[in-house]
Image: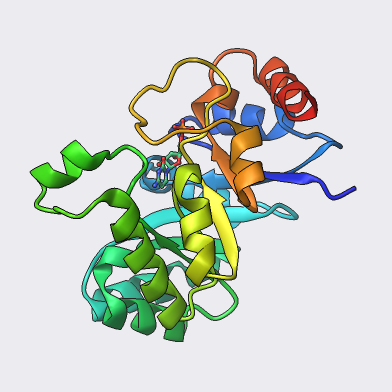
Length: 224
Ligand code: C5P
């Protein structure tokens, strides 16, 4: 049977905590990759640590959001890390997406749609007046046009994205505990896979508290 795929979000600056997360999330029942974001990659030793990881699926969640030249230059600058996946905001625009794709080479370029921490009210506050689902659909069309390799979206929008984007779909905002923290558009792991997500991104529900127990809890939840 195909294993469920999960990226564990390694959101800390503490190298020992990262090592613990990696050790304690090894499982024969899941395919686990590791996501390093702005917090770890901007920390003093984070970049070097990531450059030395071997035999793991590594995702650099840089969330680039800039003009075409800067996005392309940033991708060239991070290439030595040999990560498998890298994110950029689709709202950087089609030219920036194309410029990034032109230089990304073997790295899978992931387009990030509207953040899972935003709801319609928060979107209106920043001047986006369309419904979140409509914006995400437009963004997925753009990602398809720019030939991106994957999309990050809320698990609530996977079915919409799938209509126009046929490659990998990665969903953060996943909760199997009752604490949603700062996330607004959440679903459970089971619901996310059922909707068609290829990979889930899970941070705090795995990394806070007893990591091994949390992984067991996730596996139990998926088997129920
Ligand atoms: O702890 P939690 O499971 O909420 O972590 C989610 C992770 O996914 C964080 O590292 C966050 O930066 C990332 N992410 C997200 N929403 C997006 C894109 C990435 O939560 N739209």
